Image (tube, rainbow, N blue to C red; front, side, top):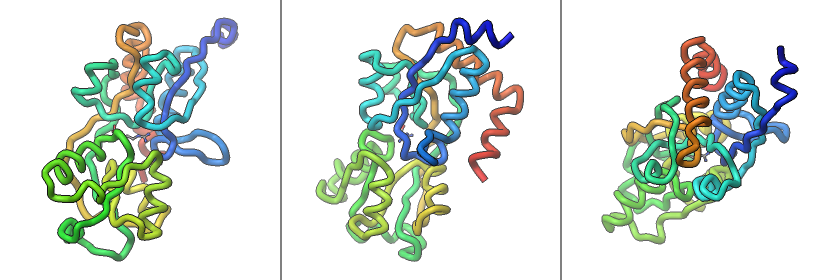
Amino acid sequence: ISFVFSAFSVTYVVGTEASFPPFEYVEDGEFVGFDMDLIREIGEMYGFDVEIRDISFDSLIPSLMTGNIDIIAAGMTVTEEREKVVDFTIPYYSADQSIMVRKGEGTNLSILFTEPKIGVQTGTTGDLWVTENLIDTGYLPKANLTRYDTFNFAVRDLVNKNIDAIVLDNPVAERFTKTDPVEIVGIIKTNENYGMAVAPGNEDLLNMLNEGITKLQESGKMDELIGKYFK
Ligand code: ARG
């Protein structure tokens, strides 16, 4: 049967930002991770090829709008603001924000009382949370916030003591505690849900992705992927 698919094979360009383990990261020169497996599985189910493009997180939505990419699969939180511009799939994962510091430096939120230098990824919900709650309120000077293009740079700066904390999605922080000398000192309950996104009105693609997610959930494949990436 597979020749039927390959004969008419369609390629969708999938935009991501690959410094977000275990959702998307680079290993041996390949894009791997939970989101990457997810979209490739759906591609296999519906007979499309996937071409991954790694771009800065805050360029993902603009790239979707200009048609440079067809799908965003980037651990992207469904927010009201974003929903005004793109169409999200049904949620496939939930997360909160966490406060991550260097290992051994503080076991509680006392870090927040020391005028910390905080790093975030530009345009993320972590960026929004810090901006709204710590900067706009005047609690921290603007200069204490550094916005990074990738989490790899942010974690490097944290470990090198150029910043004191990073605010980022909890599952990703958890993962960094396993690969880098960092630890989590607090969780900010933001109740976020991740969805993939398509350009508004791209209904056929959206329906296919939604159906794909549902089928993966029903077949137990989703749990299998969760087991593979979140141990
Ligand atoms: N969930 C957060 C957001 O939507 C962070 C996502 C960052 N994703 C990435 N691939 N770097 O803002």
